[in-house]
Length: 450
Image (cartoon, rainbow, N blue to C red; front, side, top):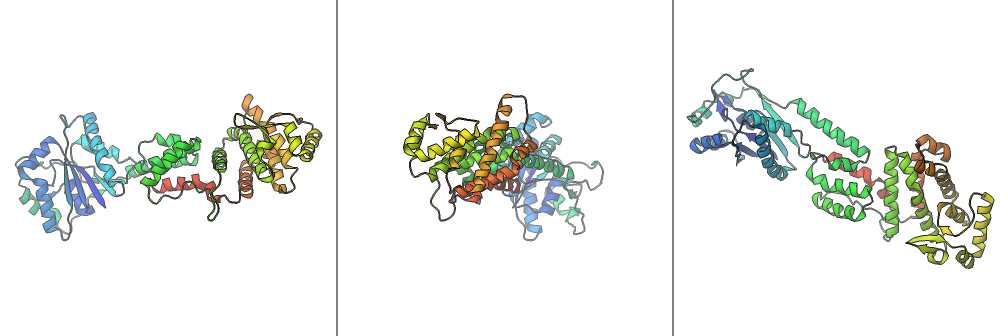
């Protein structure tokens, strides 16, 4: 549906036997609805001679098979020449009207009304929340208008009957200024650039966004900040606003039992790592890698051992701790193997303390069922952690993709792909669709900006 939003001036509906801008746009665009802003002056004219109602009746009786709904909106302006007042009053009216037509094509008449009204509408064309097209109507004289404007003694019916633009040979004087298209395109490009960087916090500060996308963007902002509760609330709101939106949490493969809460938390953290690397934040990526690897390897270990993790390790504040005495009692043979590997490496000793990536790496090596590609990947991430994490955290240094490649033999992207493959190997019940969820959301936002 097309909806025309227009001011009304003393050139409407007909001036000097030619269409005013309002009538000319209706003629060539045939909107289903016309929302007409009437200042006090124009409203007095309408109450006296019913010029716009007569215009509507004339169209319905003379233009074959075309009808439209006319909606007259009073605009209370004490001074129609005051741009600030005009902007505030019309802006409030638009905030009420536009959401009703969020899925429709909205036309703005940029040639009717006071200069201030036209300026407000022209600026609002740039609002990317709605699919708005600004239309300018050229003067038939192709210069500044010199013919008299219509006033309170306006012969409405006669002017409509004598209108020369009723001729089939009349030219279409409507133009859609390219300036507005280019500026809207620039705004859309800005949003696209922020999406590429997964900078959803910045997008939430852009007011000119389709309101139906608001909850989805806030969902992504909360999700990338690991605010799980808020992310789920916003996801529910986004599904309500967008009936065709895909599942935002596709964790489990079809036909498999639901994955654990711990797996979901691990994947969400991994997606944050992936996004960091996508916009080249290598330092933060390295700093966050260690807690992810400890959690990943701990969860993998829990799938390999025939006993409970709490039997093998102690716990403090929800975290596992190495307890040599307990380990030797539960699994003496494996405890001895770990001790030998750590002693031969010579970097750390096998002592009580917080469960760490170094200990887990050697422990997992004692299990024959761990594929070599996983052992190799765990070793690469361990070396990256040892060589780059402390300098990144405590020194004035930076981390580059070349640094990661030099240490791991893999670029950052290659490392992320390896970790994604590891997640699917360790948790075969997990769906691979979760790993592209941010990019799929980004594409959805771009496709529905207007």
